Amino acid sequence: MDNIVVSSTPHVRSGESVQSIMRDVIIALIPATVMGIVFFGIKALLLIAISVASSVLFEYLYQKIMKKTVTIDDLSAVVTGLLLALNIPVGASWWMPIVGSAFAIIVAKQFFGGIGQNFVNPALIARAFLLASYPTAMTTWTVNGVTSATPLATLKTLKDGAALADLQIPSLMQVITGNGIGGCIGETCAIALIIGFAYLLYKRIISWRIPVIYVAVVFVLMGVFGRYGVRMPVYEIFIGGLFLGAVFMATDYTTSPMTAKGQIIYACICGLITYLIRVYGGYPEGVSYSILIANLAVPLIDRFTVGKIFGELPKTKEAKKA
Image 1 (tube, rainbow, N blue to C red):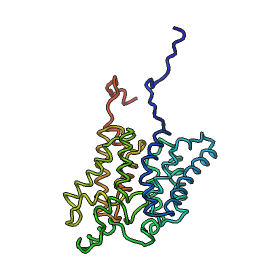
Image 2 (image 1 turned 45 degrees about the vertical axis):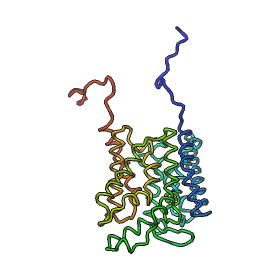
Image 3 (image 1 turned 120 degrees about the vertical axis):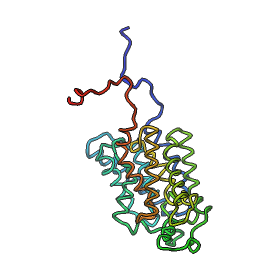
Image 4 (image 1 turned 120 degrees about the horizontal axis):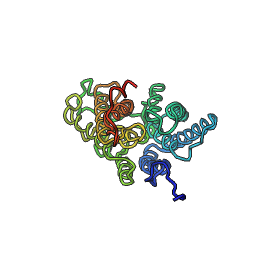
């Protein structure tokens, strides 16, 4: 009996680790990354490399300077840098992903305690920071060396009374494949993002709830209400960054709800805000801001959706006063 050692919980351990999960996310992002390089050229590859390298470097330097354990081998900084790169246009200057990476890693992540402590998605808040700081560079879309509007920006002109028949928008097949479509490096090829989604589901890294419900809410709202009399729900879900955001950023463990009910509420909030910004907001796209706003609501969502602890005693007035 003296040889029995009772360890602390958890007694059931998973074979997964932060590193293995992040590795699977990177694998899932490979199709979108490859297609972004194919469509946008060597400049896209350069921006991706700079963003990933600078994210890892900033995490290493910060932890070294602050005398903390260096955790760059968990690959979370790689994922942040890759997601940031996929969320910027190919026309961005080479130094912009460096600025964005510094903001994502140091301000949004490390200042709040590192991985698992951030209250918003670091890559998304960095994109919002770059968009606010350099709006022209972050909204200039280049395809084959020619500046062009995104399908969302073109549809936004319906607000000014333009007729759909007069708008030169890409075909549905084009927006699904991403060929010749203006946008951020990683958002144009919906097929590549769906492949990544299928891989994450297969590996059980994420649940289907947030991505599917998020996209479904946008689909339903665009089908029922549309935009200024035009209803193209299928077309609307394949344009912009909806799939990239729904699959890879809205599902972030730290900034999304823990319960199934909470995830449903969270996804509905993301979908509703995306629709409102796309149709009535000043920006053509609303995915980034919708997820960031929903991130802020996660603690409240968790508070009202997390079940009671087994064996928990009911709260009394005396306990509340204490």
